[in-house]
Length: 448
Ligand SMILES: *[C@@H]1O[C@H](CO)[C@@H](O)[C@H](O)[C@H]1NC(C)=O
Ligand SMILES: *[C@@H]1O[C@H](CO)[C@@H](O)[C@H](O)[C@H]1NC(C)=O
Image (tube, rainbow, N blue to C red; front, side, top):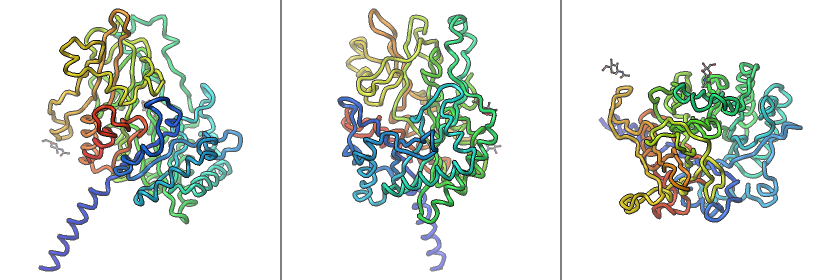
């Protein structure tokens, strides 16, 4: 009897432990230090986030195309101004925190067309280059006190999707402008095998020092083409899937759509949703508890015109990225606090919006999917303003705390390893929206 009791208690402890064990992987982009005004991010802003994050990932280092070494992308700031150390020293205050350095991440962009990010493929192609990369990565990681390395490898993106036929009338003459740059990788099959070799070799090299090794799958990189989950699994601590930017105003300038649906939408390609990506990895023998669901803290914006229709319901015709935000200063992108300040309050709605955006919540209808009836946030949230007089129209697809909580609930229901927040510096780190700091991060943690 006593024995049974002990077993039950042990089992309960195990179950509780498993839940508490969910990872909250937080990305920190060092470029945030150079934003202006309220967008400028200094290290002390990290503190409230680090009460929630289990891992902090520093973005990003790059690869030197001349010698295949991993190098800081901003040496003056990362190294000379000691930002690497300032970040890793946060472990003193937060002893449970693990801090990793990430390479790539879509920030190490060099070349165009076939040459774009070529070094990420070239480094794979020879044992010597891989060894050079691995040794330099290990040196960098160890020297600055990081706990490990995150590979946000810059493989070529898939071709942007073609415009739907119903829109074709608008741009028969614009066709050459619509098609984005696309790289045809004739050696994709080899690169896939060589990438697995790289990961195995890094693991062997790291083992002695107990360093962590993780991976981020960047948006629009086809996992089927470049990643072999079964072979990668034994060598990786976790993999974050960036399940957003399925549509972007840069890849899809003429057509706005939900950027980060959880499930497949009607009339969209089957693989343009988070659930599809998760299933690919699970179905190829990748352990659920090492799989991390990536969530963005920013929205994507398109310019609405007279030809965009009046409903705001995507997909619809647009004329490219929406204008830049006051802090982030990048066309087609708005950080969560930049979005929340544009959304009409109940008072403003009563007064006829006053140039503010109308927010449309995700339908909360319950429906059957995979025998689950409590999945409601299937698409995502958007907000828009039709063009009027001298004011430009705008449409933005974004995550709000509700959609994030529901993605985290999916993570929990599927027994995945946790969530990744990409990134902290675009969440509302000052609490400008409602007074609460990091609403996206907190909503994710809440849902787990
Ligand atoms: C990804 O690659 C697979 C296998 O080559 C292909 O069937 C699929 O259409 C690709 N997906 C995209 C979005 O290009
Ligand atoms: C889902 O429900 C159907 C019919 O109710 C059942 O046949 C099927 O086995 C269920 N699938 C799962 C994965 O539970």
